[in-house]
Length: 517
Ligand code: SIN
Image (spheres, helix red, strand yellow):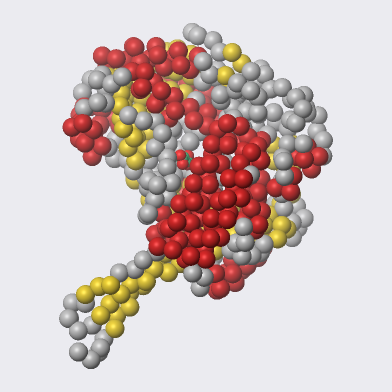
């Protein structure tokens, strides 16, 4: 087994949290160029506000376990205040022109880009990903603002020849109304902008509930939206930790909310859809994945390994589109395993702020326990760990060694469950039909990957895979320009692209009769 070099968190470095707790405002001031981007209150009606009860919850850094600060522990009453505010704002915001909204979103984009460093630092603090990756996420998040600022003035309807020959018909697309937006911790910026920029471009107002692990990036984005001139009440952020279930339920069942957009697990998606059914809300859900990554024997193995690393270990394996099951052709299985193991041996895990660190911690102990369970289950059933396979406890409670496992078979948990962590599990296959069947054998269908140089095979397999997205000869498929979303238990609806704004509009048809022909 090849070993890793660990980078120890250097907590005493100037500009970074010291091991001992100091007042959050002082800590943050030493870390952000613009300390006013660090907000510990929720955001309703253009103002940063406390929960009516005054309650707060603590947010910690997953790399160190240190307290970063606190956030407002809002309850259903606070949420209703936010919903009422968004509903009042919708009355006027829905009448703004697409061009006016485009300018607001573009100003938000400009401010986001200008504050990339600070937003990146907030992401690294609360999520743990490396600063370079966090800043990359800010660029990715901003790309949705840019994209939807360009879409806002182009929400066209149709002119339709009526069947009877004498009527005339046209359609208009109108904002759906107040939207409830529920976002995860793994992309504290991008999952918000992918939804909110589309909603605002369409003329909707929103109530966002960010994950309790990562509220600060959301609140900083709200502050930038305020500075960009997005009117009060259009974007509202409600933070909660212990009231998660009651607040989520109210968001999904309130008759004033007309749409729910959620990114998260399949189980929670099912629950939210159930809750949203009593008011027949429009929904778009981006849920769990279990991505296959198929490597044929005709491909350049170095390229395949590069793509595998990109797909598998982004965010330390904590993205919905991370490869979860590598299917490698028998003829190149051993060579691919050796090259991937060698590539993983070059990783440096540690505190995301430290120079040279390539991968940060997992988000919390529950995530680490699942990763460990999948490794233990695989090895107990005969798989071999070629690198990693254990917690990196010397670095902190949430670190796990990036891991490659060979000899993985269909009876192991990782074949049917999404690990959401840094394990590359290698299955062996021999025929095209076999691998498509194996790839499709899961309940979910978000992203999939295929490495081959055979163009005809690309078409056959891309059409045969039951997944919403297929990456061919690349491990990086996420782009504001392309539709993002899944099939089967990975949910429905598309984000980004020209389709993303459709999730936030309704189509009205207007028929004009008796036109006096
Ligand atoms: C996700 O993990 O949910 C999103 C990943 C991406 O946008 O690339």
